[in-house]
Length: 135
Image (tube, rainbow, N blue to C red; front, side, top):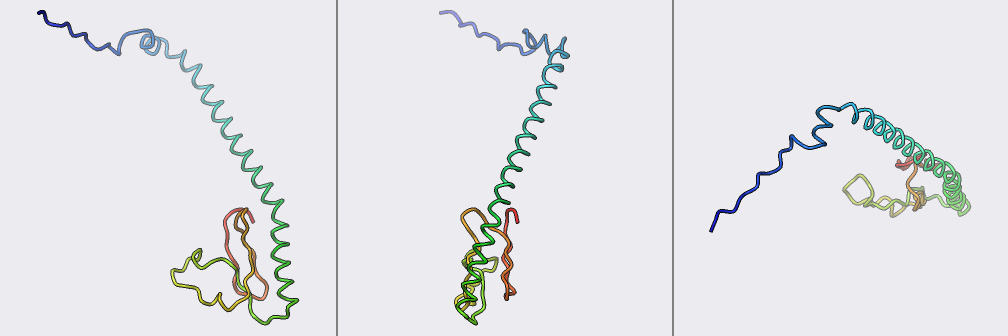
């Protein structure tokens, strides 16, 4: 029985890639720098386009959402109710950790939709709801 010959691991300092990186780095520079720049420009334009597209949708939907809240306020006025208004936002979405009992005795106005949240000041009320997204 003879001893098995163990091969040495390949030397990372030899081969075509190492030779090109060591002696001709300018080849990688003139190729990779423009590719990197093009990628950065593409990604920036892609991001700006989608931000612009989303903002256009938000602005288009805003008038409909405001109209929805106005209709609810008009209904409340038509009933002649003296009960103050508040948002219909559930207590678990509130910043406070205590149960919000005051909403149980107030007229609730739905201000949030599936599309997102917005800031809508309610007339005759000191309550307005602050929301994320576009106003």
